[in-house]
Length: 306
Image: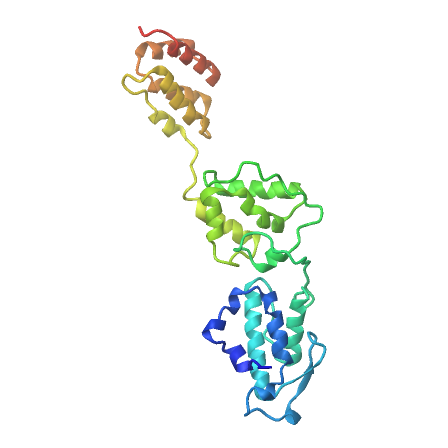
């Protein structure tokens, strides 16, 4: 049976490149095969077996023999794996001994982080690809009851920070947490917002704060701002425009307005009317509510032209 040398493993041929594209757990079989080989057969310049230090692998449960030359190459490979794993949300220190290298890798492969940290993993990946593997692998709280996905979804039109804060609170009210919120976010986005999430670099989101920062930065400049008093004042009745059409345009703006008092809204509507007799009537009746204002205006819309 042919053997793959450590030289090929450490410096793979172009067709073998892409180690960083794999899930770190998918590297387990190749690493175990690598550690199972007799290094002295890979390079005739290596030390003889009698001078090869040995170590017991926690992955294989059998001795591994390394020359000092091969030890350096092996720890280099494991260090590269450490960096890949670190990029996906895990901390694995650069190994200084064969024991430390294989122990750290074994700890990762049995779903535990080195140095006593651990996480729950059930073999499933959850959420968008932009989430780190650590987030995708973490099992949501057992009491978490996902919210219905047929609710109104974010399309980039609402103010982003308020929406993402409300979304998190909704998940928490259903016994979830930030991890659960990140994993299910894609189900509550649509159109350009969903496309934005899918377009983020793979593994780039490693925390809730990362997600919020990216979300707000992207949609802060593009979301539809609420209407203010200036927009209402610019809403003027056009020449020969029917009163009903003017009422419709003004009401649509008013429904999207924020922080506009009733008095200022009534003044803006009155200022936009072209007919003097209607303006005078509003002056006499002095409506105090939007409802009363619309009653008066609709009476004009239903009246015959004078």
